[in-house]
Image 1 (tube, rainbow, N blue to C red):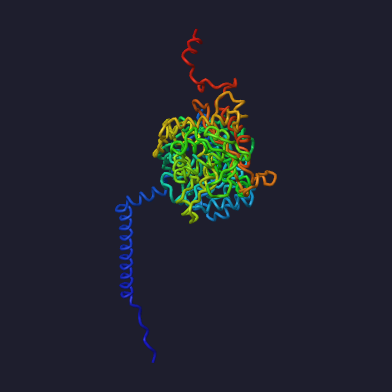
Image 2 (image 1 turned 60 degrees about the vertical axis):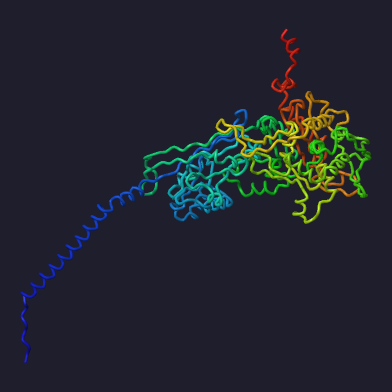
Length: 632
């Protein structure tokens, strides 16, 4: 039997539709309420937060690096300035695949694989987020045009105009002024991250490094509005940076050039000091180098040539070169012997050409193998008699000798503002016991008395020792900075003056030095014969390789770089010193024959006028009677 057909219940269907409409309307109303509540929360309750966040996305604070202070010589000649330059910078966060971007830069500018490696090295160095990294400096107009044409292929790459350090004097001041270079990762961790924001260079050597805090200045800021791509639309607020302070050096460009010419291309060092002030007038280390490539990044090949050169142009011989001072210290040893009371000016020693310790057969040779006979202190200094000073050193002993030579600055840093300076070596009993675990031998005291053996000094220390002789023991540290913003530097830890039992002891040492140059038998009398002023000096010869007992020095049997160093220290005019000079000529062999003429050339350049006579400011005052006769 067939089932009955059920009729459609329209009332039930209508109720179901109404229920669904109500549920849907309630759901829509609830969602609308949630949206309104969320909008209220974001727009009203968190208005300040999101407003600030939005503003930060649009407005950025950018650092403005300060202009580095300028450096002048004592006469106002620019030694280090800042030159406008266009550089290529890459912001890694905005460049996407920055490795690919570097490849495009090399392709567009037609650079070498070495340049590509240098760019990558700079990009990998530590830096702050979103900070542009300069990778190429001193762009030409053609390079700028190529970057502009290919800008669509170079996201995050910009051509930026900035000031770059420049050294117009080139290699003349490379070892004294030094240079700036890119901040490395180690330096970045030590620097103030705020004050060095936007700064990519820092002093690496010389004055640039020692006075970095003074030369750098203080960073400034500007608030800028940017678009979605980070391009600056306008500047909203600006706080100008404080430029670094200018620095005036004690050095003289003309004297520096004259000193370099005096060396004549030979390896060596020259230091000239004004004894009354401690001003370093000239400081030459040859060979030298051009510091400008180090500022923007020297190539691997160029740096390797400098680093591996047998002549070591990067080596600062003035501050770091350690050489036996040789006979240049004999006047200081003589003054020490007088003050210690072991000799008098008239004490005589017989020189047969050698010296022997009691009960020892070993002969310590004088440079003059035939001997000088009976010699007193003045003659011993004039003739540079080794035998006399062997005997004097033996009488003093190592302890007193070490004490007195330390007062003259040997074995310690003497400069005020030269951080690279080596302390040298002034040996003692304690030093040898700690270094070699051996006792000190009497023979080592003898050779120390003539500036040989373990003793090592820098040319700067020798110049300062000569200045102390000129100043009669008054200590003024040599320095390179004359004024900083018009103010002279202050010595935070001045050295004590050398005070003797009798100030006349200085005269005996000084007279002996005068006789070296002006005495008939002086070792440098040829130099004195052509001088229009009195010079007090002392020659020295420092052994590079040892010679066996009984053998004579034969230059023909030695390689050029194994021959003796030539040294000479002096001050002038002897009666009223205005300049003290130390010269070291590597493998020059003869202090009096090679180094002494260099000293005279430097002194002439400073003391003499165009007429070949002493400049008016260096002439001794005329006696009153002479002045009256001139007035009449």
